[in-house]
Image: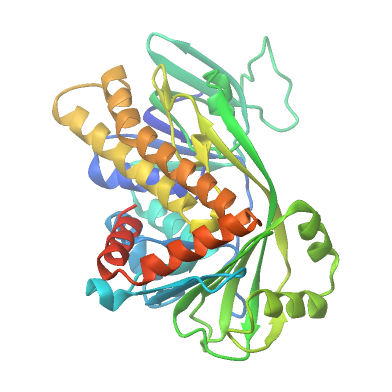
Length: 411
């Protein structure tokens, strides 16, 4: 049997999984790392169109990508620094305006397309000598003995013998990392339960070309059916394209999905109060159901969960990917600390420290997002007055705005 012996094996080659592999490889060059991804499709970066799926990278996340060597492939190409953020309530006059000058920084963050980040991380991983990546790896069999995990995928068109495929490689690893998304098989094999909340909302994402410049500003309006955000894009020669993230109650979302492009653009223009003039065109729309999910534990014997495998969050604050990247950051720090002390990276003390540093932080963010969703979705007069008064109070307090900005940028 072909055995691949590794120190760390990461299941899931999305943004967080690749960032974890690259960060561990850079910080701990003595480690042998494997990255196993089920898909064989690499999302292309088109020179004439934006990806509808984007990430609002915080400064902390940008620094992580810079440390891996991936940011250098992104900077100045397909990233849009945003310098301002405008948030307002559809049911009242409450609004808040954030400006990077309030904290004496060049920007509040960067809007980057998902496929651009993935391409940069993949290119960087191909350069790292201590990382191997296998695509098309669909986890079929796993077992644990002598303190090691053994993972195997089913090879196409081959018969299994006693539950094992004699021709498919077996990855034997000290530390197993589940970065395989909200429906994580690693989480399932560890028998870790989750606490789930169905928001009964659907997120629609697309790219819109606007009549007016986006002004390097992130725009977000809270409707009683859910928030709509327009995030600035750059890299294709103008400043009039925005990524749209419209989180709507399921009934409204179904109606919006059925509209043709012209009708959807008119509804979007109305939803954002024509702040960017007419919506001239929209790209293909994608939709996905919104649920909060939080694992009851972030680790099991010799294994850890990161990113959506550990937690999913409402996109109204755009923090999902950033939380996952910070998981990768902290796990890399704990592994590096363990190696310096001569401790196995899979030791329970290492994984429990990782959980202590991340689970409480993520739980607080999930609770805050659920509270915001409930507050801005409430339609009665009392709650409308409360949220409009709150927004106005925040806008009138430079100190409070500064604290919110600095908190958000360090997530």
